[in-house]
Image (cartoon, rainbow, N blue to C red; front, side):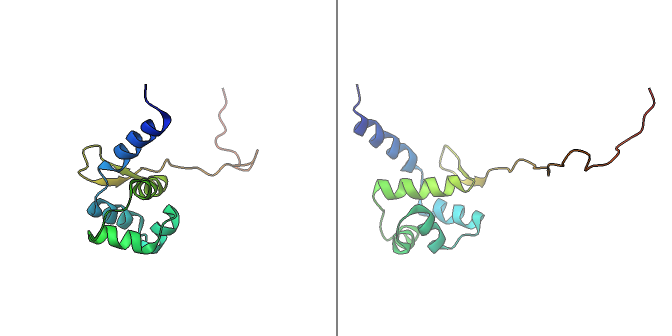
Length: 110
């Protein structure tokens, strides 16, 4: 049996295993986010994002997990094999109309 800490550690390792500096830059580019915005969304410093994306240093697993979570929450999907990222398709939204607001659609006699 795994303890809660062990399970969390394994989950964090899985979540961050495929997050490379290049994927982070690509995901940020899809969202048109500056490094400062990603840092703010992930709750980490801009320097941490900058150093990670430049390959200068790898943040601890908790910070990497926060980065990935922030990107995924914004709609980025990571390919399982680590080969790339894409934006999640947005479901088409239709404005809701109040009763009778649309008018008469068709007048069919049955």
